Amino acid sequence: MDYGYGIKMNSDSAHPIYVTQPDLPPLDEFIPYLQQIWQSKRLTNSGPFHDRFEALLCDYLNVEHISLFANGTLALVTALQALRITGEVITTPYTFVASSHALLWNGITPVFVDVEPDTFNLDPEKIEAAITSQTTAIMPVHCYGSPCGVERIEAIADIYGLRVLYDAAHAFGVKHNGQSLLNYGDMSVLSFHATKVFNTFEGGAIVCPDKKTKQRIDYLKNFGFADEVTVIAAGINGKMSEFNAALGVLQLQYIDKALAKRKQIDNDYREWLKAVQGIKCGLATPQNYAYFPILVEPDYPLTRDALYQKLKDHRVYVRRYFYPLVSSFPMYRGLLSSRPENLPVAVELAQKVICLPIYPDLSRDEIEFIVSLIASF
Image (tube, rainbow, N blue to C red; front, side, top):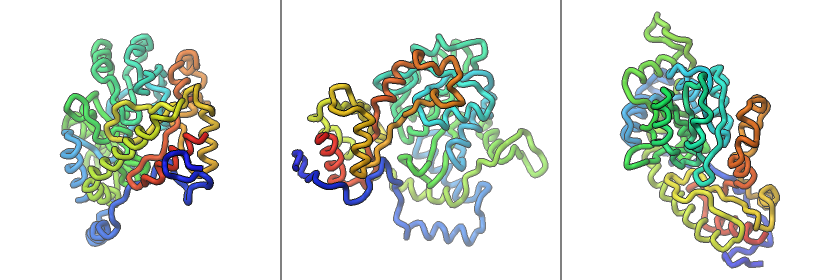
């Protein structure tokens, strides 16, 4: 049967379609970089590719100081250490578990606050009610790359003397009011995981405002060593390797092209999903097209989970980002702020959202196939 998109829906996809797929540069262009690493025998500890990648990233992202890490979670754990955050931190339940896990690893208690229905981000108007004498910071997440209400959040932080650490794992290249979104707050943390808009296989980074802070971060990610015989803190091994940094240098040459492809995919989904009753596109104004969330509303013929399973049956592997909520996992369930009645918007979104496949190599035929499936159900 043809559902009006030019695709016959009487069989499954010819191959599995996953929610994302890493964008990689031509292998023949990466080999010379590997040869340089083999010749230099510098594999880690701030080698030439590492330092070059940091400088190029600062230029591309329009930030002053950046410190590379082996992954985004280590960067988040270290950022909390560098800011000397303790006690309680106000954060969102609508995120990947790494956000809150980084707090627990630092002995910090997360205090979950509900999110906004349109942005999926921490609701600034609900932050003040959650502040106690133990609160030392706010850790919002730019969910799906959509900017948080940074001005309101930082105004609250200023009034109460709180730090602001942004989990910007989804927000590579995103701007706000004409400047990099990463320049807001005391620090921002990026992820370069294979599933992200920009990847270095594995990797992450901390963006910070001044040279002194960067120096402390660089000490902390190298076991706390300030020099050969001086250890200034209980640091960690969070350094990015030369291999990952070299890939990052090459990836920067292709990121704009990748973002353009993602934008076209986003446009196609929006145009073709208009006619599907009960399906609402989740982000009104995406910037880096990192994700394509849809909301499965009550007037759609299937429940969200039934649609998820039907797509999976046809080898289209979408994801329910973010379900279950972080606050529902065993290590957080006992917190007062984790009670579902305190998080009604996040609970509702977690029951409605499906993220559809989006990555540069996703073909137009595959997009039509996915949309036709959704329409056929």
